[in-house]
Image (cartoon, rainbow, N blue to C red; front, side, top):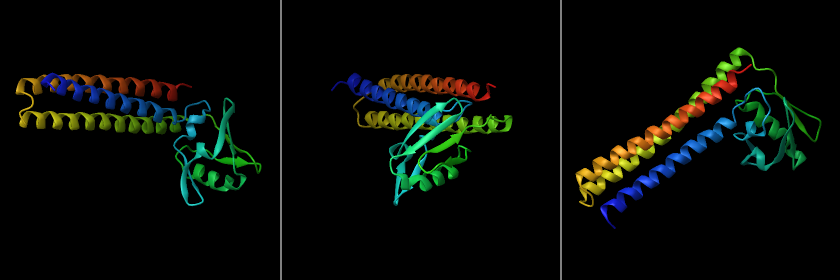
Length: 190
């Protein structure tokens, strides 16, 4: 393998991993409530189902029949209490009500204070994404240093690759910042 192949392989790996960080953050943003009901709101909720922590979407059908309501229809009716408990303990701030077979979540109008709290939540999610991207950069930098120390690539190649890696990092962080701005605007929109 030539020097260029080693370096470009590392950079391709970094691009792919950073892209996954951005996509993961985009998915997390989907689980933060805005003014409209979305089944993705409940993606982060896990239920203690007979001692096993199970994602809610594996235990029930979740739908949004109206703009401000979610319905959760458990596959196993005996899990209703456990699902309600998981929702109450989560950070989505909704109170479930059930009729014995379906759980309903009514989304109230967001208050200004709640909107500000949600902006803090998405800012925290974005920061986790940035940290993940920087961790990828750190790992690849370490690999590049090891290749240089082992004599597999020269100092010039290492320096060039680090510059390229920094460009990729900046691009992905900027992408995250754009996503954050869109999500904040969506939350603050009245």
